Image: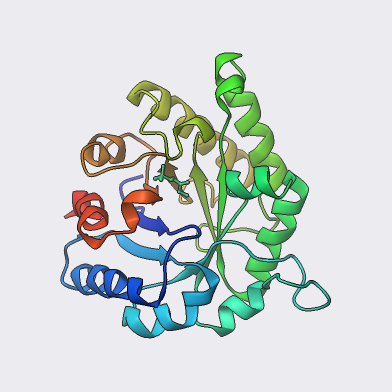
Length: 249
Ligand SMILES: O=C(CO)COP(=O)(O)O
């Protein structure tokens, strides 16, 4: 798996005003100067900043955080994959646990959004992960397996799909799974991907997300089948995010 190019992705969630683009510019400059080594560096700002972020990023990829399954229409407040593409985005996150929880998104919805991303020419980052109750009940692999088989877009390739494993209980809490647990879930996801996408599943990037910090990034990114990070809080400041992406230097 060593030939997979890692991805260090920042998800700004509902954070960021125009002034925050200074952080993005600093991240882009450092990435271009080689501070993330061979890793690809991506920032997913809120939709209001996508177009400006593309301008500020100087070629570094920019992504959206969600998209509607339809290309256009009467869906007040929603944004389509085509609109993100038109604004210059190249990636979009779909099925983040905050969307699954706050907006009741089912696996079926997530799959439709991921397929919309592919249709528009975006790379879909599909998020999966168990809740604390599910982990404590020993259901982690069953839950993640069902999310994988239910949410992945049909016709995906390693060039159009990224999977992010984000245990819900690790997001924004400072808690992380043990290295053994991360290794187990990522190996399981790899196995499922190879099964579902023969010839491609071996090469799909699998990111870990959930309280990734400069202090734990090297250990987490060193786990087999962890091909990068999806970073929330620590992606809001260039210094912290670059310390994480810098593990690939
Ligand atoms: O949800 C996440 C990224 O999508 C992780 O968030 P934190 O890094 O803030 O825990």
